[in-house]
Amino acid sequence: MDTSAGSRRCRRCGSEDLVPIDIDGRGKILSWTVIRRPSGAVSRQGPFAVALVELTAGVRMTANLEGWENEPAPGSDVVAVGEIDGIPIFAASDPSS
Amino acid sequence: MRKVSIAGVGSTRFGRHDGIPVDELAAAAGRSAIIDAGVEPERVGALYLGNFVGGMLTGQEILAGLAGEAMGLSGIPCTKVEGACASGGIAFRHAYLAVASGMTDVALALGVEKMTHATNPQITEALNSAMDNRADAPSGLTFPGVFGMAWRRHADRYGTDREQVSAVVIKNKRNGLSNPLAQMGAELRFDEVRNAKPIADPLRLYDCCPTSDGAAAVVVMAQEAVPARDRAIDILASVQSSGSARVAGHPDLCSFDATVRAARQAFGETGLGPQDIDFVELHDCFSIAEIIDCEDLGVVPRGQGGGWAIEGRTAVGGDMPINPSGGLLAKGHPVGATGLGQVYEAVSQLRAEHPNQVPGARFGLTHNLGGTGVACTVSLLARPDA
Image (tube, rainbow over the protein chains, first blue to last red):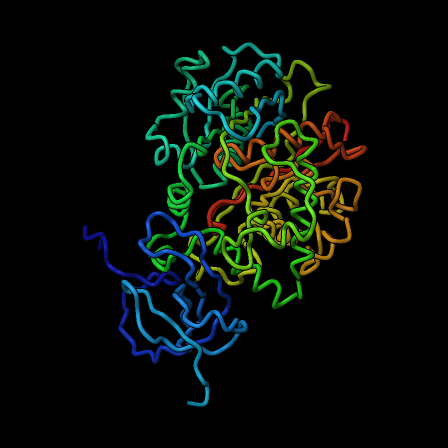
């Protein structure tokens, strides 16, 4: 019996029929925080910001956030501008651009 | 399923217990619970122990067997359970199920944690293992950060402000002052809470529970076998539920659906409603958590947790007393012991022996939450004459 250990499945319906999609890195901030006392497991020192971002494509993710000093409002638009160790960094975007 | 009661409770002080091995700490609480119950230790037919970071911070596993041996309970099944900060509540529920199912007449639920010997970065790293480490931790997110994000969302949606959130801290720290088991009771002013050092915005130091050593224990017994009915407290419901282990997996940052689910089931099983509850011991790991939890449990209307706190409606003399023990914020949070510490406090209330007694308390609710709301327990306890 093939148990397909390690194969990727949809968490909602269990389907293995997954395909990569292109996303434009745009989304909005649901909320954010500034980590001042990091875990010993990360090499970075605080302060740095973590945000929960909802991508236009519908996916939610925790990621890093630049420009938190400007106190972005929840719901404001962001775009991915880079990454640290595979974790996207988002920054405020002008929604009209 | 048989009717089940709590026959005895025991607890160490929460705080620092330098030089006491983790199994000895657990055994100290367990022995006092057995004495309180007035049962022969040989009658204990099963032991369940809640512990979360013992392996990581002390290098010691097999704690259930070690604690059983330290108490002279030889040969019985000794099982460790883990559900992050809800480990103690889960141990309680397993002891309840062992008795309710008829497997044994007497079961012991134990919870223990030793944390204060470790550094803050080590403790944060150990606690972070309660996140899905592929989804959330790589961004550098910590648990104070999870609740910082929840606070900002709650503030945005309901207008909850820092004064309201600080009112939770001030109330719980004040309650802790008169609880001899509490680690950090204090009389605090708003400006002291507001100006404390920042941890994860908007959370500051007093918004976060301390790290603690401690143990708590509960002897659970078939109702018909309890020797002293006048001191026994009945377990009307003991429910466990789960939610997403990932922040992004939560439909709403202002709510933990595991809490909502567990509370609904507990009320549904008993026919009781939030209006019947005389007091609540809930999982205030952070100030904002108390506001979210009381709304999730349904004991305070949605969005009004902050308002109720600042109006004194959740104080001991208020409409719905929350955490008369001082909660995790003042009492401390030895993570594996916390859920059983809550049961200890609730039993003291229902026996009318609590230092912050809610007058005439007949029904109490305890709520223990783990991780990002991945595990939750809710129990409804009652005076036998209720």
